[in-house]
Amino acid sequence: MIIAVDGPAASGKGTLARKLSKHFDLAYLDTGSLYRAVALSVLSAGADPADNDAALQAAQALDLSTIDETAIRTAEVSDAASIVAAMEPVRAAIRDLQREFARSPPDHKKGAVLDGRDIGTVICPDADVKLFVEASLEERARRRFLELTGRQGDRASALTQTDVLADLRARDARDRNRTASPLKPAPDAHLLDTTKLSIEAAFEAARDIIDLAAP
Ligand code: CDP
Image (cartoon, rainbow, N blue to C red):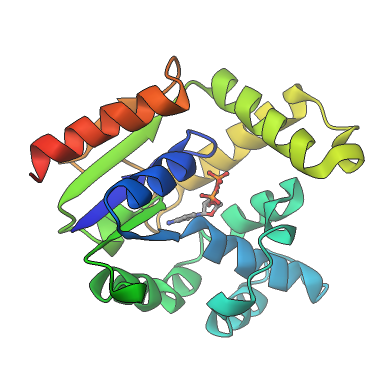
């Protein structure tokens, strides 16, 4: 069973996808972490994320086992990730890796949950269930602000919720308006608006959709 979970930044898709993978005993891949890792690698090399060659080189050298889960979550890396993710050669370089994960999930799991922007449209167009998770921009900024301040403590003290909202807005525009695999719901995706839902309520709504769609 393959479950595709797409949606804009901080919509709750990662938390939801992780919970679904546990509940249905499936493998989980956060595809955003791949673009984040490419971006971090470019930034760490002192290159510009808008440099096509540097980004492609980083994508081709991507090694899943060395992704630094803390370092890829900064606001700077988020922004750079959406820049490298708009480059078709970068996307192509890490496409097979994602499809292979879905086709042969690790740990002998019987399927996988993948979350990202183009899972239902490009990576796994034949997924058994597709969810498109949304939430208002204000609610997403509130969630991401809490996440960033909680994670980075003092380093984030200069950060305001207004900055986070502006970052999300810019990243949304970049993700939605790019020509390479833009963020959009697949025609057969189930829309799930989590603006007013708790984590548990969003999980229950998604679980019900999956139980009905893929019994
Ligand atoms: O966690 P958050 O929702 O903020 O972002 P993410 O899922 O970690 O993705 C970071 C960036 O990677 C996004 O802004 C997209 O530009 C890009 N991305 C993408 O283009 N395609 C994917 N399948 C996943 C992420």
